[in-house]
Image (tube, rainbow, N blue to C red):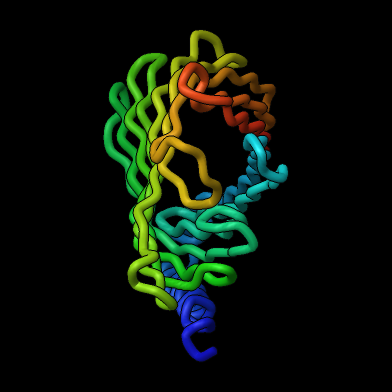
Length: 217
């Protein structure tokens, strides 16, 4: 029972650290520097999974960013009926070729409990973008059940409202005959809203379809 709460304790510690660091930074940069700092930005994402011979489920993700600080909450991501809380550090370089990287640490709790170092990155040039998110979950209930998760994708955006490409993922949240899922995607966006459909494993077996809706504010 004690082990079952290790992930939750870690998650609380992460957010306590993030809040303390943010408070200290705001205090030290009071006055003119504080007024010049950018506002918070938020995003909400929901992935609906249609998996052959399995029940439909939704994986929501909520994130918040302020300057270098990145906070994130996920559900049904590392495992079904499992949540995770994350804190990370944003940094970016370049303009014509833009690289953005966010190393993170997370606490996982629910059906799976553990500690997870992770990352997000994107490399953009012209109308092309290579991006990926990943993590290694150290399972505190069963070390043999620890695993690596990743979702890389290549995106082409010919016009502002249309994007398409190819994605892959290695996940434990559902099972198929293929260890690595892969397939094309097509999406549309309007202002702060986006909608994307992924079709994994088409041509290899009965496909898994993922419907993704996103909102930034």
